[in-house]
Amino acid sequence: MSIAIKYDRVLSIVGDVIRIALPPQTIDDPEGPRFGDLATVAEGNGPPRVAQVVRLDEGEASLQVFSGTAGLSTRSQARFLGHPPKVAISGNILGRVFAGDGRVIDGGPSLAHEPQVEIGGPSPNPARRALASRMIRTDVPMIDVFNCLVESQKIPIFSTAGEPHDALLARIGVQAEADVVVFGGLGLTFDSYYRFRAAFEDAGVFARTVMFVNQASDPALERLLIPDMALAVAEKFAVEEKKRVLVLMTDMTAYADALKEVGISLDRVPSTRGYLGDLYSQLARRYEKAAVFPGAGSVTILTVTTMPGGDVTHPVPDNTGYITEGQFYLREGRIDPFGSLSRLKQHVIGKETREDHSAVMNTMIRLYSSARDAQRKQAMAFELSAYDERLLKYGALFESRFMALSVTLPLDAALDLGWRTMAECFSAEELLVRQNLIDKYYPRDEAA
Image 1: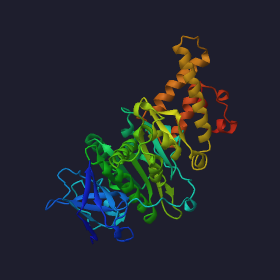
Image 2: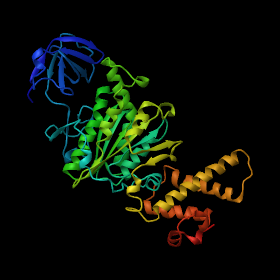
Image 3: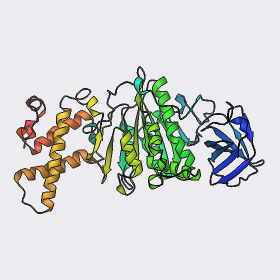
């Protein structure tokens, strides 16, 4: 690796940011420092610390030091490496765990000699992407039946603190129909990281999984690199190996908080609730990596976005909603069927799935909505009709058979169970479903 530039005039050190003076001739120098490039900073004979160029102004560059600036002074020296962060990419990275700076942290053999690619590249050209047309089955009934996950979709799980979003994300990673799973952990506790890894290992899918993990005690700047590393690897597997890649990331709110932390250290003007004005662009730049590549594979992105205090108008979920193609709402330990939405499900329902899929989905949700009304009538001590009683029975069955996160069912089995559940509570005429579907799928031996 050639090191082209070395400077020792330090202007200031504020937090983890060190400002380096640049001579005038570097402005037009193609070998000079560029935004996003890596650098090393060292004090005397001390070990070099990795940093990244986070701002370029006339006559100076600002470097964010990954491991902090403690022990550095204005006598430090900076060397620019001339390239942005890179990540190893080959079949040998499957089943491996990386830190936010690209280091292997699983105790396995080094991957230093594997091919590497630069991270943070442009998103695929929208005009060259193929249309979404394939479903990713997860065996989670509330997803497969009611809000299908579709290849190339970008969709978050909106959740709050204390909800089992990590368990749901790990379960989807284990059960989803994907060739490769790329996991990005942002600000995880060690216990959370261990649970994810144990879930993948216990299910026997770790050999097709790549993990990039930034723990809560790790530098904030490394947290910002995790999505770019995960997506660079996903894109390479999709394009060059023609794999169906599922990218899982948690928690994007921690990513946005890291953006805010770095921005404040650079004296950038904050916007709503202290977040920076380019929050939307930063999130969109990552989410727009989801695509189906013609003649190759695909990248699908599923993330967790926690809503502080359950506030959906918080800047992170609010901006996310304008970028993504729907959302899954996790409330009270269940996926809420009314707040959840998949905007791409119409591309696969009835095309890649059974002919009765749309009818079962719409009818079950309509009846569950009526069951919720009956539950409110019961709570207010109103008199209930016989139909209300059947709605209450249906609501209880729906919640236990479909909404419980412990339920695992293939799609066709879930559709059959949906017909049986409706038949236990309602006659065929009350379902208001096309007669040809009733004749084919309605289980009359279990009719109410």
